[in-house]
Image 1: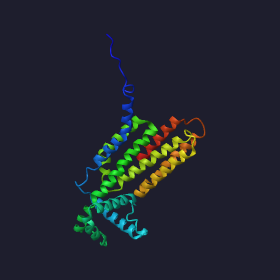
Image 2: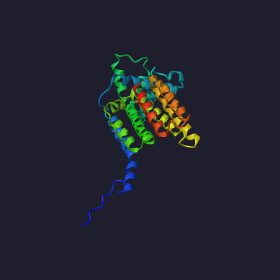
Image 3: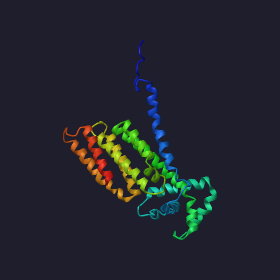
Image 4: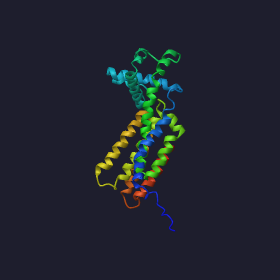
Length: 273
């Protein structure tokens, strides 16, 4: 009697395996988004209502063309107020009854700590800003997965994406209208696109390939710095990465695999900074 042939996972249904990999990014996005929406209508942190008010100030300054007044915080927290203002705009469209509260807020000269009425009205616009931040941070998890996949393969990328999506600390911060999670997301994207650019040099003959990834890294770096100024440290990390890149041009000492290893080490050190 012949024993049944053992079929490996790759041999059994390669089409199913490919479909699983294609659907994984969507599943990862939803997996990241769900815990980041937990904070909606559950609790309020003290700083968030201040960010709602700053978002109102930004929205009014843009509407009136007062560009000098669009800098409403020293962090500078630009992306946070952008998302907060976008959330407020969407909420006013879907729920016009909030327009009265919004107009009341725009007439305040300052937000004082003992103004309970103002904080109550600001709380009505918090969920929309939180939702916008949660969506952006969830998209960042998806992009991180795709970039890690380019550098280290699907297995490492899938594990990293799942851990990042379900990490309680990251998920908790990523659902708040605040600067910390956004700055972490943009800084991580800046580092990974920088790594892809460095590895791409010499592995792809098209010059625009390297330049394109470098431009994307610059865009992510700019968003990180506009969110929170301590991410200026990315400049130091960029210098280290491109020192490695320059040395790799000097001889065969830095093979592509060694280059990836050194870039990984550089990213590990930068995360401690």
